[in-house]
Amino acid sequence: MSETISDLIERYSGTLSHISDTPQLDCQLLLTHALTKGRDWLFAHSDDTLDGQTQTRFVELVKRRQKGEPVAYLTGSKGFWNREFQVTPATLIPRPETELLIEILLERFDESPRSVIDLGTGTGAIAISLAAERSAWQVHAVDIDKDAVRIAQNNAADLDNIDISQGNWFDGIEGSFDMIVSNPPYIAAGDSHLESLRHEPLRALASGAEGLDDIRMIVSKAQEFLAEKGVLLLEHGYDQQEAIVTLLEEANFKHIERFKDLQGLPRAVMAQSPRDSTA
Image (cartoon, rainbow, N blue to C red; front, side, top):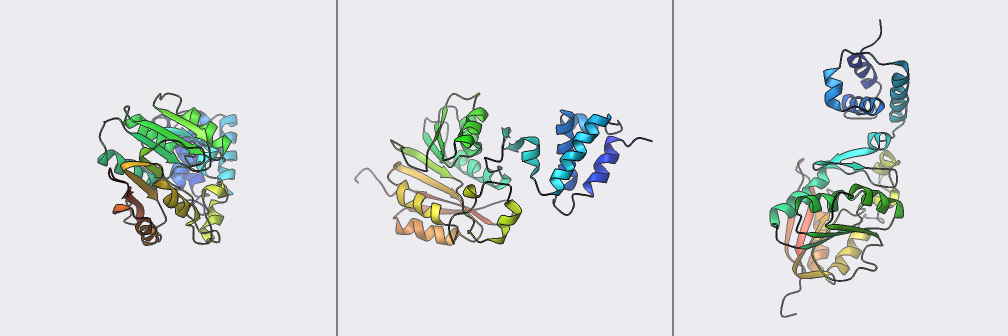
């Protein structure tokens, strides 16, 4: 008797438990990709059987996942906020915890016209989510990698209030912004966690011995590009918050705020430009 879709998911989920905290979800996503169907279809047809070609594609994807390849790279997409983003090994895979940055800025700033820049945009997840939610905002995004820029531009194709360009942080940037936001590399270069992230671009993950090299640079230059009362919002590692607060204090930023993610871990810091109308 042929195995049903439900049987296949159950069987192959067991082979992924050593590599994934969500083996069943991984199998569902890999199977929907092999079928070119949505998950709703999968649930509605759980008692169906697969043709040999589709099952072979699915098993090959599972084997690659067993070796540590991320599901998002195998399927070519990742959900973030309320959109699906194209991803490739040239881009960091968007993480759910980064949605905190979107929540903070949308809660703090209304629909009024504003200017935003996202530094190190990768897939464009942050910049595109903001542009989609706030049509009156003008959103800029930069990334040093030309392939990442191309992917981000593809992801932003349906929006007309965003521009994405290649650049190294602030290099070549002109003007001032109401908001500077970034999820920069923040893992220490020797951190053991990098092994589990080996399929993702190292330049988007690691940043010096303490993981703070890029954040230091952003903090040191941000006020040159912030408008009066503009804010800088940074994602960071769970154990870096106080070090970043110190950097911001030393740079004379005001109204420094700390934020935690849904797991209760320190995840972001926001601070206001030291510039004012009398400066």
